[in-house]
Image (tube, rainbow, N blue to C red):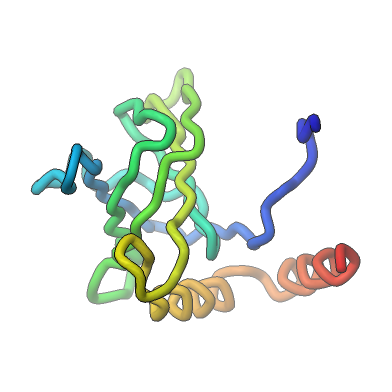
Length: 144
């Protein structure tokens, strides 16, 4: 089935001005001790993932630990996820755009802490304009 042009996301994406991400790559059995790259600008985030800018190309399916720093928050949001796409960002100060899908939320080994979902929902309510939230909810209701 051809999905070109069809929006498959089920979560609303939003920007958080000034948000950055540091990431660690998963090696054979564990994650690297230090962050591979720090202070990468976050382009947008949702309950299901995020898009950020990077100087380094990251392979598709690479597992990452992300430390998402949000202005005004004391501690970064620590999330686990997997690179779903990477594309060149020609002529820009950062060479690549990276798309990461978060692992599921839950109590199992590679899941994300469920409280992080609550935090992302709170950020969504803070940063998404009300009319955009309403429009997204209407579209979701039409799908059902």
